[in-house]
Amino acid sequence: MTRRARRSHRTPSGYQTCCACQPGLVITGLHLQTVVSDWPSAVIPKGENMPTQERKRALVLSGGGGRGAYHVGVLRFLEEHEWFANVVVGTSIGAVNGAALASGHNAYSLWALWQRLRTSDVQRPNLNPITGSFLLDTAPLRDTLRREGWINFDRINSDEAAVHLRVTATEVTSGHLHIFGNSPDVYPSRMRQERLELDHIIASCSIPIVYPATQLHGNLYWDGATVANTPLGPAIDAGAEEIVVVLMTPWEEGEEVRTERPRNLLTAASTTLEWALLASFQADLKMFRRINELVRLQVENARLRAANALLMSRLQGEKVEFEDKNGNGIPDILEEGYKDLPDPIIVAPRQAIEVERIITYNREGHERLYRMGYEDAKRAWRAAGRQVEGEG
Image 1: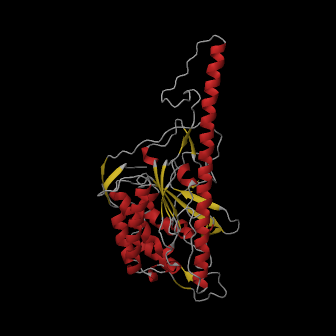
Image 2 (image 1 turned 90 degrees about the vertical axis):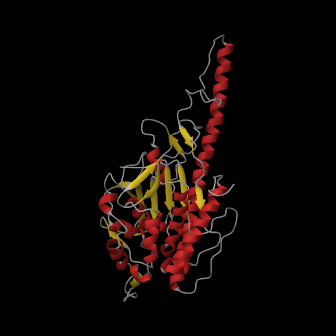
Image 3 (image 1 turned 90 degrees about the horizontal axis):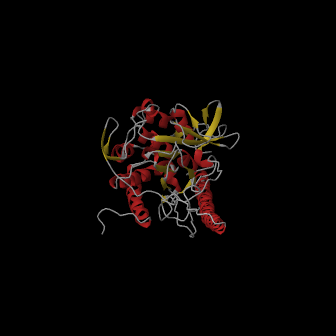
């Protein structure tokens, strides 16, 4: 799979590349037996299969339907700051945008597609909603993605794929979240590597009640956001060390989030999904941080063990020195293990975006969300201690 660390411009047909460097991450953990599958694994083992630079950066794109232009504004800011994802995890409309990126699109070509996208290109009323289990039919979305050049599945499923792509969907009968990918994971996981097709993308977009479930592998699937809107685990399993998460629900830790009162069945379904989206990410981030705290406790325990072993050896008249190349107080012989990953950079709006935008696609709305995504990315970048170009 072909990768680039920095791209000055990218199109579906070719690339211009140059080099970029980011500060390295500090190895601070010990050897822990941690399963990297369902939970966001903040602990990463070293060894022969350590992710290369080609898997270091991951972009996690949340669901949000017609609000997907917000992703593109964030993407433009990241590209302007020479941050290019090697791994993309997409849920719902994030799966559509992720598949477009894996096909070779960049912020500029993807924005051109979004500017043309209208509600009629995505959905049409279900003429028989009483006997069916959905309100809107997504047949137009299938046609649009094929006809307008959004996705190139031959490229996604080849060594020329632009990113390692992960798409999520929820199995209707079991409620299990399934991760589908176009490349192997670096660490043990339950991701299903297989040829990705249009059904995978539509399944990830199948919002319960609003859209019909999608048949895949003989099972019915709903939107991946039903149980996990912005899963961190698949990004880390794929080998990422530096993660940017894009939410379309306000995210300010310690502050209460409120949405408007639902006015009809569609907005009620959308509001329900909105809360599910936020809760799933909160749970993922909480687990991520708890694992990091465990690593830090293990680090302190390693220092105490090293000091005790050195003292006992000297009391017995032995001359023992433990090599500690990085000077962190932990002998290299004990430091086998794991990385304490930094918190992801979280890009999210300050104010709730109207839930109607989940099922509304028009140019005016796209342009507003695109600008909002760009400005929110700038704010999150600055809050993470990164330098914003043009600022002192």
